[in-house]
Amino acid sequence: MSIPRPGSGNPAAGASLWKKTPELTHAIRILIDNDTAGDPMSGVKWARKTPAKIAALLRQHGIEVSANTVARLLRQMDYSLRANRKSIASNSSPDRDRRFRIINGLRARFRRERQPIISVDTKKRELIGNFKNDGVKWGRTPVDVLDHDFRSDSSGVAIPYGVYDVLANRGAIFIGVTHDTPSFAAHSIAQWWRLVGSPRYPGARKILILADTGGSNGSRSKVWKTEIQTRLANQFQLQVTIAHYPTGASKWNPIEHRLFSEISKNWAAEPLTSYRKILGFIRSTVTAAGLSVSAFLNRRSYPTGVSADPDAVRQLRIKRGRVLPKWNYTISPAL
Image (cartoon, rainbow, N blue to C red; front, side):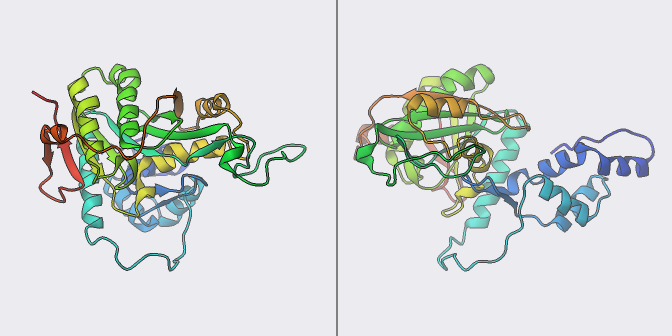
C-alpha cells in the first residue's frame, strides 16, 4: 500500500498540511479500502476500523493526526456511526474473519501486480412500468404511480447484473430480461471482458472475481463454475481466481457501496417505465470520485433449472485454495 505524502521539508509543517488538504482524506480512503461496507440502496457506508485505529495506522506512515480529526473526516466521507442491534443469528460462520483475511490478501496481491479485480453481483430486480421507486427527489408535484406492484401490470422485468472494476473505479451493468441464472452471470462477465476488460487490461492473463456466496454466482453452483470455465477462462485464455464473501457479508462486497448505491441514488423516486429509461439512468451515474458506468441490454433467454453437463464438470480445470477451498479457487484455461 502506498500513501502519497504532501510536500517535503519540515515534518511538523508536513503534518499540518495533511490536516488542511484533501490528501489526508485520500490516505484514509486507502487505509480502509478493504474494510468498508455499505448499503446498496441508501448509500450509507461504515468501516470495521475505529478512528483511533485509523489514526494509529496513519502515524505509522509518519502522519500525525488525532482520532477526532479522523472521525470528522469519516463523517464528511459519508461514513456513519452504528449502534448495536440484535439481528444476527448465533450460527454465524466461524471462518468469517479468516475468509476476510484471505480476500484482503488476494486483493493486495492482484493490486500490486496491476491485474484486474472485479466485484460482481445482481442488483434488485426491477419491474418495468409506472411503479413506485424508493427515494425522494426535488419537484413541484409528486409523481402518481400504481398503488400495487403487480407483475401483470408491468411490461417486463429488468435484472441488473453488475461488474465493478475495483482498480479503475468503473462499473458496467448488464440488464437481463428473463431470469438471474449462473449462465446469465457468467455471460455478463464474459461480455464485460470482451467489451471493456480486455481493452483496459491488454496484457492481463489472470483476473480476480469477488462474489457473494449465494445467488447466480454462488460457490456451490456447478453451472457457475463450468460457465466460467467455458465462457471466460477458455475463450479468453484467462486464469480466473474467485473469492466468495462469507454468508451474510454481501455488504462488504465493493460493488454494493461503490456502484449499486450510486445507481439507486441516481434513479431515486423515478418510475422505471422502460428499458431505455433504466439504461439512461445507469449510464448517467457518476460520482465526484470519478465513477462512470456503462450499461447493456441483454434480451437472451436464460431458463431456470438447468443442470451442469457432467462432461463439463469432469473437464473443469479447478484448483482450490489450501484454506477454505469451497470459497477460494482458481479456474485455468483448458490446455
